[in-house]
Amino acid sequence: AQTVTQSQPEMSVQEAETVTLSCTYDTSENNYYLFWYKQPPSRQMILVIRQEAYKQQNATENRFSVNFQKAAKSFSLKISDSQLGDTAMYFCAFMKPTNTGNQFYFGTGTSLTVIP
Amino acid sequence: SQTIHQWPATLVQPVGSPLSLECTVEGTSNPNLYWYRQAAGRGLQLLFYSVGIGQISSEVPQNLSASRPQDRQFILSSKKLLLSDSGFYLCAWSPPRDRSVIDQPQHFGDGTRLSIL
Image (cartoon, rainbow over all chains, first blue to last red; front, side, top):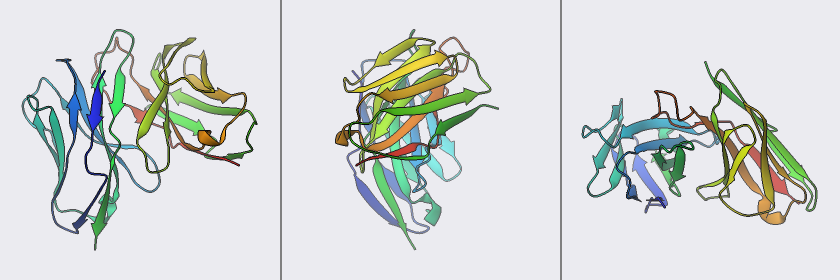
C-alpha cells in the first residue's frame, strides 16, 4: 500500500518570505503522479501543482514550485513571496493509475499561516 | 466544462437517524467518483470509490454505504448515524482510466459539514 507522510502539522511564514512544506511517500510503483492541494478556510480543495513521476524536471506554477526527489521519495512544495491568501491547509497526494481506476492517497496535511 | 455538485452544504442530524448525501458530476462521462471524510484537524480518509455504475469499492468498513445509481451520481448513505460520523465529507471525481489524460487530478465538490447530535 502507498503511504504519504507530511511531518509538519503546522507552519508559519512572514508575508513575502519563502516557505517549504515537506512530503514523503512510500511506494513500489514506478508510474505515478504527485499533487499538492490547498484547502483554505472555505474548505474547498484546490489543486496547486502536479508532478509526473517520469519527469525529472520539477514542476512550477507561478509562486509555487516543487522539489521532486524520486530516489528519496520526497516531494516538497516551495511557496515564494508568501501572500496572506496562501493561509490554508496543504495536502500532498499520491496517485496511482490502475486498471480499475486512479487511486489517490493523501497526507494528513500541513496547516500554513502567513503572518502579516 | 466539468462541474461537480455536492449537497447539502451543512447538515445536523441526531444520533441514530439516516443519512443521504448526494454528489453529481456534469460535463463528463464515466468518471471515477470518490467519497472522503475529513475529521476536524485531520487529513482526508477515503471512504468509497467507484469506477462505474453499480461498482463500489469500500476502503474502510463502517456503518456508511455508497451507491452509484447513475453514471454521474454518487450517494453516501447510512441507516443509523453514530456520533463518530461527524465530519466534513468531500465528493471528488477524476477522468476514467481509459482517457488519455490519466494524469488528471481529482476535482472536489464544496463539501458537506455533518454534525451529529
